[in-house]
Amino acid sequence: MRHILEAIEQRADSATFASLAIPESYRAAVVLKSEQETFKGVPSNQKDPRKTVHVQDVPVPEIAPDEVLIAVMASSINFNTVWSSIFEPVSTFGSLARLARESEWAKRHDRDYQVMGSDASGVVLRVGSAVRNWKPGDRITVHCNHVDDQDPSSHDDSMLGSNQRIWGYETNFGGLADLSVVKANQLMPKPEHLTWEEAAVNALCNSTSYRMLVSPNGAHMKQGDVVLIWGATGGIGAYATQYVLNGGGIPVGVVSSPDKAEILRAMGCEAVIDRSAAGYKFWNDDNTHNEAEWRRFGADIRSLVGEDPDIVFEHPGRSTFGASMYVVKKGGTVVTCAATSGYMLEFDNRYFWMRLKNLVGSHFANYREAWEANRLISKGMIHPVLSQVFDLADTGEAAYQVHKNMHEGKIGVLCMAPKEGLGVTNPELRAKVGEKNLSLFRRK
Ligand code: NDP
Image 1: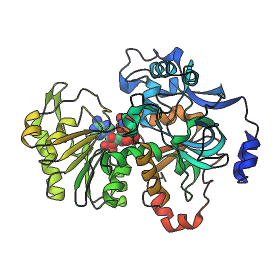
Image 2: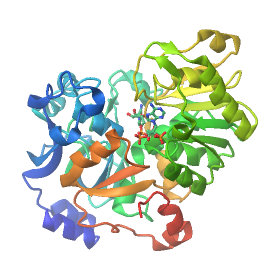
Image 3: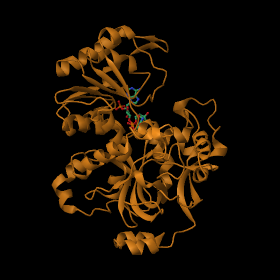
Image 4: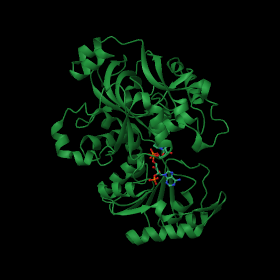
């Protein structure tokens, strides 16, 4: 791979990139089909990604006409890396088998390993014969919406596509690797003022938060809206907090430690709730809600901002959902994209219908939404929330830290990039944005 790295460092022209020899195999972080039963009977929080994430060489696949082969400079850990590696809620090998039934090209995905990873920054090496807008040498980031553009159901909102998938989670050849294969319609320009690792951590979480809060497909926040954000310094929450502040809303950020509360205040969020210090107990036991605790939580929000939230940015799921549906304002909206603590959700429907509340399900983002979210990063209006950087070889440890909630913001992973700090091509914009804004989440 040395010759590829040299061409990237020298910012070689497109013809040079197009003529580079492509190796037969590449280094990748994978889970193995043979290990999908490893954690059978083990409680979720004891399933350890370090046991099931392997870094090994895998063959370079041929690219389809609508695909590109990219050199991945950096990638990131998403919570779906955790889900893949602990085989929850289901093993992802089922998705690969279903994908393989769709076409001759799709058959490539069904292997006894899966290359994980739903984020990447890097450089285009090869383009398929049907690719029009990208060429070898282009510096890119990748969003994870894998869409069948020949399916009519994809053409209103591609997230509604009947066989829409998340690249690197429900497909093979993900971004936690030195090379990756993606559809051309997953590419976006790399923000010029960012390093490879800063550019790699945004697309999945930033686009998800954009759709949930800004897009008409989500809660469509307006100026002055009070937005309650669970996990407000976590992967999606840290972008949500920025969107609320940028859009003239009033964020109420929930976190679980004084350190995270400090980051939140440094971002400009004045209303902060430390849920650990508050000690909310929304459930008396596995099956009984504690409504008095919902009320205490609501009172805490009112004491901070003087009113109930117009929008709740929900994703913890079972442990918080009843409280979220209770505290949201009359006529307000709970928007949810996940259920980290459990997906069988319960809430008191009386408060829902009598107070005319809304519930919006949201999942990743269509190309347009991802593009708009990337544009805001490129203009320095939304910032990466990179806290730590791991080497590809340590992907298992990085996923473990996210699983155990030991992290803040996003964890980046260096793939072909030999060290941190490379890849900036617009130092003037970087200076204008300011190192302080780019390093709010960095661990000292
Ligand atoms: P992170 O782990 O980075 O952040 C989530 C934060 O939520 C945690 O740091 C924690 O913050 C808070 N949290 C976790 N569990 C609870 C709980 N039981 N009660 C209250 N707060 C809790 O994950 P991400 O932000 O990247 O992802 C969050 C979820 O969203 C995951 O399940 C992920 O799979 C899903 N997701 C879905 C997407 C989609 O397209 N549908 C896209 C991206 C993510 P603290 O401890 O500070 O309170």
